[in-house]
Length: 195
Ligand SMILES: CC(C)(COP(=O)(O)OP(=O)(O)OC[C@H]1O[C@@H](n2cnc3c(N)ncnc32)[C@H](O)[C@@H]1OP(=O)(O)O)[C@@H](O)C(=O)NCCC(=O)NCCS
Image (cartoon, rainbow, N blue to C red; front, side):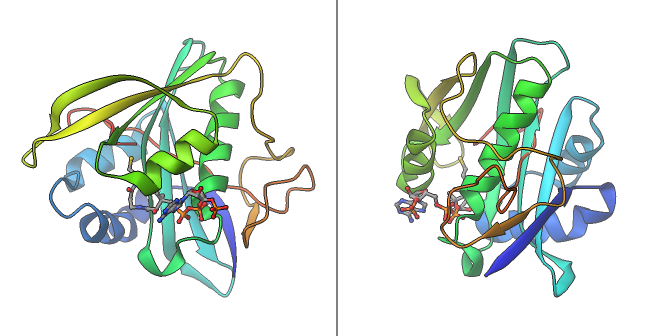
């Protein structure tokens, strides 16, 4: 399967919320929070779609990275269930990491539920390290959060070159400089990061 990535716009809110509420059943962000994220000048949200169905979003991810700030945060990432294990999550993350670097960040952080091994495996594979645990951070479930960090000074992952948007993500292949794969993510405020 092949996807393309593009920058999310406020017009993607309905499609993003459709995935959000089906994936994050107990702790979905509110529509207002997501709308605020998509509009934030400090954010960078990407969506993935199949070329043959450009009106259908299969994944999204978001970064919070104020220009010039040394810290960036992966705020969220979600891939619709039918589109998982095809490399989409990885290319979305790689594009967000690349965007954080472009904005001058030297460190990237995220939070992930302690009961979410798939996401943890993805982040560890990308070079993130667990630096802290926040007990009971996720409510109402009372699940701990892992706080994870990636140093950006020295690239630890191969990031596709060229424009950040309109790249293709295909199969399990690692993103190459050819631009054969790509994607990226977003950020949130009162709801807190979860990715
Ligand atoms: C986590 C998530 C974004 C991964 O997306 P994805 O497109 O399926 O991930 P990829 O296909 O790019 O997988 C990349 C790597 O992540 C790891 N991974 C992904 N899903 C995994 C799973 N179910 N079990 C174990 N490892 C997994 C693997 O290391 C995988 O590499 P591999 O396929 O070469 O083994 C997706 O499962 C998802 O949307 N989950 C629900 C929402 C969520 O938990 N978001 C994160 C909040 S912190």
